[in-house]
Amino acid sequence: MGDLLARDAIRLGERAGSREEAIRRCGEVLVEIGAVAPSYVDAMLEREQSISTYIGEGVAIPHGTLNSKETVVRDALAVVSFPDGVDWGGEDVRVCVAIAAAGDGHVDILAALAEILMEPDDAARLRAAASADEVLDLLVLEKS
Image (cartoon, rainbow, N blue to C red; front, side):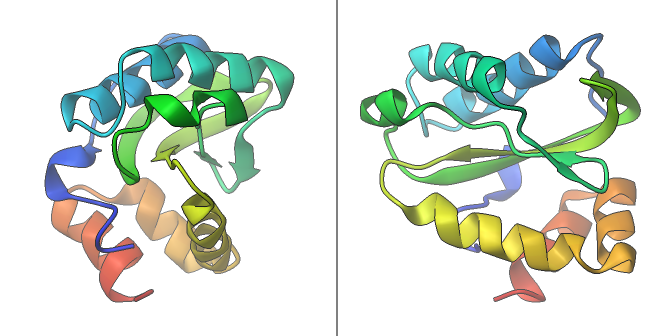
């Protein structure tokens, strides 16, 4: 995941009053780092309307629809934390790992995230991360 997650794509301590706001913030980060066109954010919201991107342990993985792949400039991840939590259809989300993938690269990303989330201590470390280095250490160095 090291080539997909850059330090400038990690935003900690964000706030969102709703799932929609959280997804918009995640999408904005992907736009800011040059990974997607602005229209990708709408595709992320559309995806969420069809199926929840909550995957457990306080983590959601917002991403676009299949039809939005042409708006992906490059495959990338963004990690956005919401320490106060966001109501995600009845689940409490503290971390979003937003995915931009033009191909099938997101499948490997999902597998790596699932591995982390199967370890309650690693999932807790991800939720509690207070610096970009902690996030990078957990998602890139330990799992590479």
